[in-house]
Length: 244
Image (tube, rainbow, N blue to C red; front, side, top):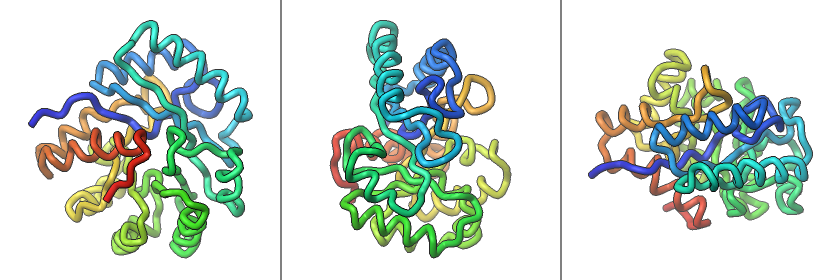
């Protein structure tokens, strides 16, 4: 079984809307890097609800469409979709319902992040609020949440609630430190992960590539699981299909 044509569901590739790509030229180079790493689909996820968010919804859409046109002209095999990384705060559920905050590729999935030091009770209640609004929450870079990393049973409880877990590629390979690597190792062993994504921000330190992490997972946890995390499950997000 070969694994080809990854989908990256978490990438800050839209230029000048957050702390990701800082110019159209940098965004274009990020597309080149992603393509070279065998990524063929990207959900662009600019920040929402945090000081890192620098642009209105209208500007985000305009700049996304500009990047989309360039990508279609230069990398026709690469598909781009629009989402957001939603920093949880009270009222996020209502903002999603009225379209002020974006779901993932216009689906029922919503990528939600929490502060690293948030208590488990806040994380759980916030994700439940998103669920009650009719969305299927994906917890962004779960390994960076300190309370969850210290007690993986919390993450298992969230999964049983219907929450989906995304981890960052660099945490798998150890480039985000031993604590993140240790947490992701536990999660992968227990098959509590649904997505591996780049969380790409630039062309140097936080590049938009998941290839190395997927090869690592394939060799240690099996090709079938690696395929699910990089192709199958992300494809269901874009198709707005429920992941069992």
